[in-house]
Amino acid sequence: MPEVTAEPTAQGREAPRGGWQPYHTLWAMLMGGWLFSYADRTITGPVVTWLIEHDHGMLGSASHPHALGGLIGSLFFAGYMLTQFPGGYLGDRFGHRTMLAVSLLWAGVATLASGLMSGLIAFVVLRVLTGLGEGVFYSNDRSLIAQRTPPAKAGLGMGVAITGLSIGLTIATISAPYLIDWGGEVFGEEDAWRMPFLVLGAATLAFGWATAVYMRRIGGPLKATGSTLRLLGISAVLCAAVMAVYLIADGAGMPSWGVAILECVLAFVLIGAIFARRSGRLGAVSRNRNVLLLSFAFIAVMWNLWFFSFWSVSIVADAAHSSFQNAALVATFNAGAGILGFPAGGMLSDRAKARGWGRRPLLIAFTVVQGVLVLVFAAYLQTHEKPSLWVMSVLLFVSSLFFNALQPMAHALLNDVVDAAERGAAFGLFNLVGEIGAVISPALSGTLFDHYGSWTNAVYIDGALMLVSAVLYMLIREQTSRA
Image 1 (cartoon, helix red, strand yellow):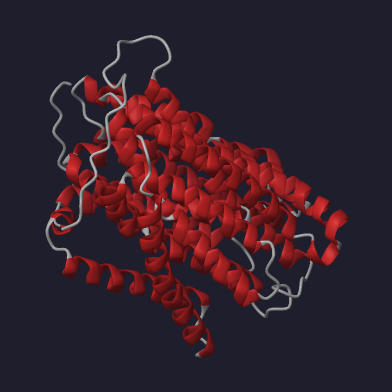
Image 2 (cartoon, rainbow, N blue to C red):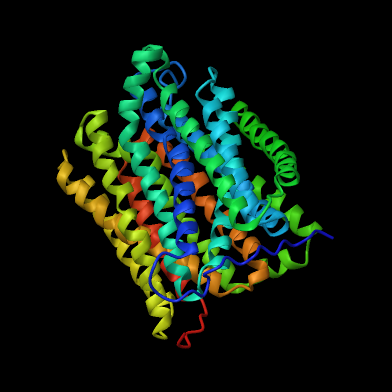
C-alpha cells in the first residue's frame, strides 16, 4: 500500500492577525515558482511568432506556420496535462513539498535544453518533457497552501501565490524581443531564438534549488530520490506516447487541431488505466459531482488562458499591423492584469464565504463579465480595419482582470468541496480536465488564423466558451453557512 505523507503543519497556521506569518513566506516562494514555470512555458509563443515572422527554417517555411506553431504549444500542454493527476497522487504519497521542488528543477533543466536543440522534432520532445515536469506543480501548490494556511485565508493565499503566473507571463512576453535581440548579438541571427530559453532555464534552475532548500527547512528532508525516479518512469512512457501520436497523426496528414484532440484522447485513456488500478480514493474524487462540474467548466478557463498567452503578440501585431516589440508591449496588458486580479479574486471569495454568501455567486458573475468582454473585443477587431493599440490594451486589461480574479475563486471552491485526504488527487483531476482547453486552443486557433487570415473567429469562440462555463458553475452545490 502506498504511504500517504502527512506533511507537518507550519507554525503560525492559526496565528493571530497582524505581522508576517510563516504561511506568507510560503505564498511568496510559491509565487516565485509560478513566475518561473509560467515564464518558461509562455516564452514559446513569442518565439514561435518571431520564427514565423522571420521565415526561420524551423517554422517559417511550413505551408501553415501558425497551425504548426500552435501545435508545438499544444504538445507542451499534452505533456503538462498528462502529469496533472499522477502529480497529485505522487504529492499525496511523497509529500507536496518534494514534488514542488522536483518540478521546478526539472523545468529549469528542460528549458535550458530546449535552447540547445536544432531540429524541430528534438525541440518538440524537449517542450513535451518540460510540460511533463511542470505538470506536477499545480496540484501540489494548491494542496500545500490549503494545508499550511488558516482556512479563512485559503482563497487569498491561492490568489497571491498564483499571481506569479501573471508576473511570469508579463516577463516572458515583454522580455522576448530584447532577449532575442541579445541572442542575435551573441549567436547570430539564425540562432537568436535560443537566448530566451537559455536565460529563463538558468533562472528557473537557480530558483528551483532555492525552493528545495526552503522546503527542507519548513518540513524536513525531501523524498526526492523516490519521487524523481517515479516521475522519470512515468514521464518516459508518457513522452513516448505523446510523440508517437504526433508522428503517426502528422504522417497521416491530420490537421493540427486533430492531433491536439487525439492527444486529449490519449490522456484520458492513460488516466483511465490509473483509475482502473487504483479505484479507492481516486475513484471517490472522480465521482464527486462538484469536482467534475468545476473541472469541465475550467476547460474554458485554460482555453482562454493559453489562447491569449500563446497568441496575444500575434493577435495585436496582425490586427494593428504593429511591430513585434509594440505588439509584445500591448500583450503585457493581458498578462499583467493578474497581478491585481489574482489576489483580489481570492480575497473577495474569502469574504463572500465568511459572510455566508458562498464563493459560487461571485465566480459566476466574474465569468459572465469576462466572457462578454471577450466578445466585445472580438466585435471590435471585426469592425475596425486597423484597431487602436490603446483600445486593445484597455479591453485586454479589463477582461484579463476579471479572468484572473475568477481563477482563485474556483480553486478555493474546489478546496471546499473535497476532503483533505483527497486534495492532491482532486486538484490533479481538476487541472487534468481543464488542460483539454490548453491542449486544443493554440493549435485550433492557429489553424483558424491560417484559414481565415484573421484572429476574430478564434476570439469569438473563446468568449462563447467562457459563457458556457458560467452555466456549469450554476449547477454546483455549495454549502453557504457563515464561517
